Image (cartoon, rainbow, N blue to C red; front, side):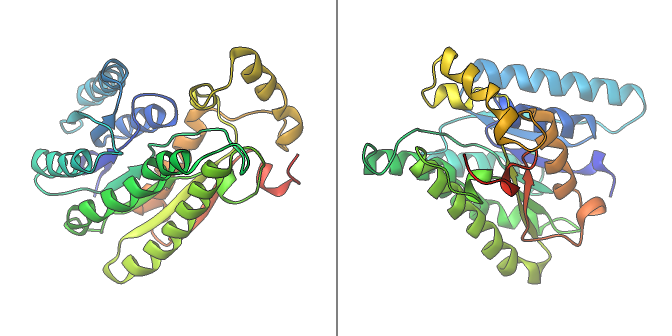
Length: 269
């Protein structure tokens, strides 16, 4: 099947990694169901994807459809609406589910709360769990069967202080990835994770870092990442495309792929 015939659902597509994934998939001819909480930013991502679709059409490619669904994935009704809208728009098919939406909050065992834990788990784990369940009929409807790519973190592979709820959520997401891969392998659905290191997005700022703290955080990547720098969203997007595409990774399932400049191989510091 050509990429132009494929459909991908991408959560957290308003900005950062999600927006980069959406744009890359559009460049490769995927029709897209994009989800996000920020109306203006999601519309901007969708517009960029439609421009890419227009360029592809000039070369003779098939029509590409880009749809947007605004909603908070912490709300169960938004998950249901997203899956149903995607199925309706694309005739009950879905080739790739990219579970990218996620939040980060700073806090240790001494100064965090169970309320914080619930907020982080609701987005980073529970929404992935439920949306995957809701999308299974769509993923089963295609041939070859669909694939799932979860955007996790190096924090799921290694331990770092000061981000307890976030670390726990990503470690749980990696275990979800492996278990779902085993359970869905008999029907041909693959499930993998990408595990980014520090990527230049707004994630840390929305998590509470000031501009000055963020600048120091990025500068420190020269020491904390073996390659001496933070990553860019498009570098994670390339890995997500590889894992989503059955022509590129059809014999890969259950992996947690670090895209982190070697940070997972270093001692935490």
